[in-house]
Amino acid sequence: MTIDRLAEEISRKNAPVVVGLDPNLTLIPEFIKRKAYAEFGESLEGAAEAVWQFNKAIVDATADLIPAVKPQIAMYEQFGIPGLEVFKRTTQYCQEKGLLVIGDVKRGDIGSTSAAYAAAHLGQVKIGSKTFAPFDEDFATVNPYLGSDGVKPFTDVCQACGKGIFVLVKTSNPSSGEFQDREVDGRPLYELVGQKVDEWGAGLIGKCGYSAVGAVVGATYPEMGRVLRKVMPKAFILVPGYGAQGGKAEDLKVFFNPDGLGAIINSSRGIIAAWKKEPYAHFGEEGFADASRQAVKDMIADINSHR
Image 1 (tube, rainbow, N blue to C red):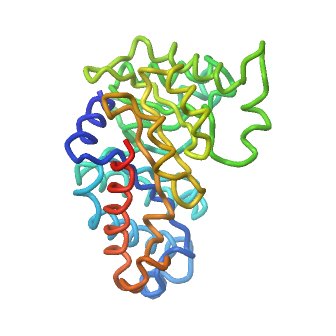
Image 2: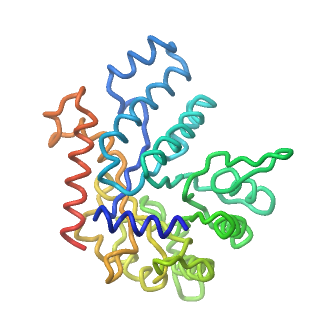
């Protein structure tokens, strides 16, 4: 199961972190864009090529330090079919480098539609006598708003293919409380979703003791994270919001279990755009990948000092 691999790689590298590969053109150095546009024009293909070269350099610079990456599919979809092709290429390249891939796709629907999403990102599709794994991420993020009907096709694929999911429980954005904090029968909605995560994952426990059904809980809400850690003792928690969104390392220890596992902390702009930030400015534009490597090292040290 991929959850076992994730726990193993976090322990082996002593790095409970995931790098969010969420590129947009403002984060990509000009020299990369110039080269891509010279070859493919100022076009969707040119933009996608720039994203690919940017991703590849960052992965090459950081793969030995981290267990996983998390590409956000919207950053690729905005460039149409060329962008989606780069999403697939990025996934394959990262896996060839030994990294696990968390597809941040936030899918959720019902019936055959949800089953199709699950097949596209985690499972397989049969075409005639042949079988294909279209995007083939190791994990995917799932929106539970439609209830168990929307999640079960994903857990079925997790069971069949040994993959995993992270269900949105308490997201890091400021307006998340408009729905997620509303009380239902005296309990906030995010707690009820967390309880369902625990139920959905009960039959999918790996050798590591954690479930293939994890949760997304923002670093910006540590007190809620403390509660949810108890509600979902067997769930790995994917924690966005560290760094750029204000989440601090000292607040993250509540997401971990006593074994030092149970959480993986995401940083996107803080890593891939490190070259634009003052502490790493000395690397310069040409050294953007080296800046990302140093930012990963600093993040790992910061988090490990508090867990």
